[in-house]
Length: 248
Image (tube, rainbow, N blue to C red; front, side, top):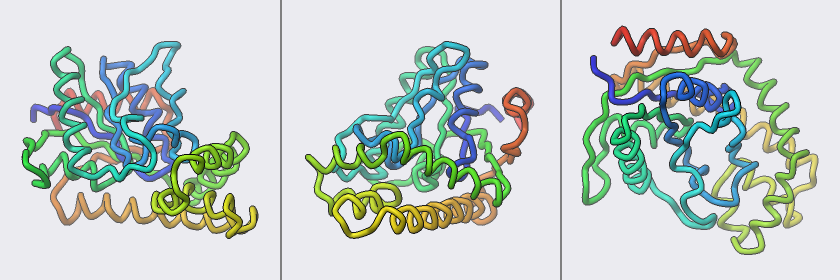
C-alpha cells in the first residue's frame, strides 16, 4: 500500500505527541494536530499543547492546526477537514511527510473516511494508522501526575485570563480542564472538589477515547497498528518506519 500520511492516535497521556515529533524528526515529517481544543489560542496548559515536545535534538519540528482561532469560537469538524487539507497540501508540496496526531477520534475519522460535512468533500487519505496503547493503571498514574503539574504550572491563571474575554458558560462547554477550573474560578467548586472531579472526568474521557478507537478498528474497518507506550522512543520510531517501508 502506498500511504499518503501517518496517523498517530491514542488516549490522553499516552505520549503520542512526543512520538509524532520524534518520528517527524527522523523522516522529514510535519505534524498535523487532530485535537479539537488545540486549535484555540490562549488555551495552552489546559489542552496540553506541550509545544516543547516539538523540539527534538534542538531542532523545531513544524506543526499545523494549532492556535488557529480565538478561544470562545465554536470550531467544527468541517473546519478541521479544511484546515487539515490545507496543511496536507502544503506539507506534501514541499516533499515532506504529513503525520496527523491527536486524540479526537471524530476529527481523525473525518479525514480517513472523508465525511461529507460541507460544500467540499475531500478525498479519503491512505494512512498508516499507529495506535499508542498504554496500560490502564499507568495511564491513570500519568493522568493524575500530569494534572498536578498543569495546575502547578499555571492552569488556573490561564483560565482566569481567558475569563477576561470569554464567558464562563462558553469555557465550561469546552469540557474537562476548562469546565472544572472555570467552576472553581467562579466559586462553584472548591479547589479539592475541582481536582477530584476533574481527575475522574479525565479518566472517563480516556476510556471513551479508547472505545472510539476500538470502534474505528473493529466496526468501521480502519486498521490500526498498536505500539506499546512503554517501549523506548527509538524502538517505537523504528517500528513505525519498518511498517511504513513494508507497506503493511
